[in-house]
Amino acid sequence: MKKKQLQKLMKHFRPSMEQTKTQLFRELEKKAMALYQLPIKVYIYRNRKNEMIIEFLGESDKEKTIAVPLDKNFNTVIKRIQNEEEGLFERFSTNLVEEIASYWQRPIVPAAETTANEGKETVEEVKEATKESKEAATEESKEAATEKVAEQKPTEQVAASRATTQEADVLTAEAFIEKISQFPKFKVNETADAFIVVEQAAKEERVLASIDKKVADTFQIENALERKYKLKLEVIPLIEAFAHTAIAKR
Image (cartoon, rainbow, N blue to C red; front, side, top):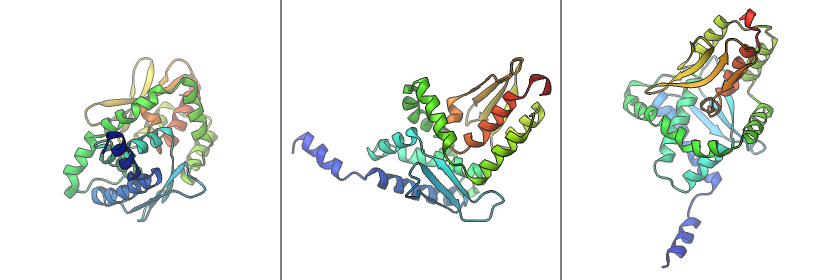
């Protein structure tokens, strides 16, 4: 059989995009329980194809259902998994489960400690897996993507968080630092010129955003935060509110 014929035949047996997503969702459910004892159900509504719904089946003080926007980067990774890129399915699912568990603040169970540590080491690799498509986007497309995320319907908890931020006249430095520290692995470092929002990664601190100390309304959101589907809906409004606060009132 000729090489082209073989490739064409193999292509027919590859799972479709929808089948690949379903396979990923089942893997997320399995890993969430195995690594974090976190009972979840992951699915997509027929009339909301651009959102992944994650439903927590246990007891929690937080919202039990969250909607995660599925952007072009997510679909790019799904296509690469569909094309059987070696190791990507395992790394990507481990990274997503870590993000999901961090929302409900579930620690890794001792029995799964080794597997979880391996998952943490692959986080950077997953970031690199989507970096090419992210860097290829123009500034205009980045702005369009941001506007699209803003238009998508957030969960009730995220909506309440935004409403609270918008109602506040000011956000002091002390309050901002405290709110950011409530997110797992997040903290604020201060320099002479800026407040730096960072995440403690496996081996180093990753810069997520910076807010100018001397000029109001001057801040920068890094790609590392833009790739955190759920967290960016909660963290970015805090950064914007703090940046908009007059310097004298911080």
